[in-house]
Image (cartoon, rainbow, N blue to C red; front, side, top):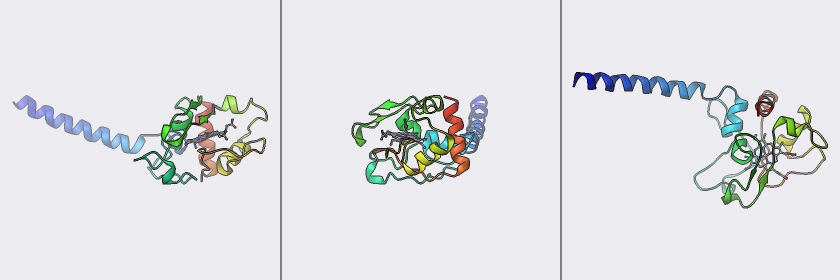
Length: 146
Ligand code: HEC
């Protein structure tokens, strides 16, 4: 009985420590948080051009990984509620070796304005993102690591 009480207290403390750890250090940068969840490290939703009617029920924001895959290698029709679409491979090694190649500047322009290096406009549902220079640099760092 005493043992069980100690165990309960021990679990409560462990859970509190784990919860504190999760809310603080869940992501190592805004770039990682945006890539995975479409949020900043502090949990603020990053503004983008997708509006609630575009989302599947019960979801109001998405990270890059939801469409492009957590390995960034691209996904075929990942979100049925958005209709059929293909989100391409966005690993940095792929983006910088295709024609015309992405540079850091062209990548920033592409994800902010929805325009590819060849001048074409991205189709739905690729959003336009309101991201700072620092956040763009951090997203590139994530894509380089894939
Ligand atoms: C809701 C789904 C969705 C989300 C979320 C999303 N993308 Fe996309 N993305 C797409 C689709 C679909 C395309 C292809 C658009 C086209 O072909 O016109 C695309 C295209 C791209 C391209 C162009 C690749 C190329 O070969 O030219 C880049 C770069 C890109 N996305 C980066 C990102 C980044 C970075 C994020 C997160 C900050 C992100 N995307 C979030 C769906 C998404």
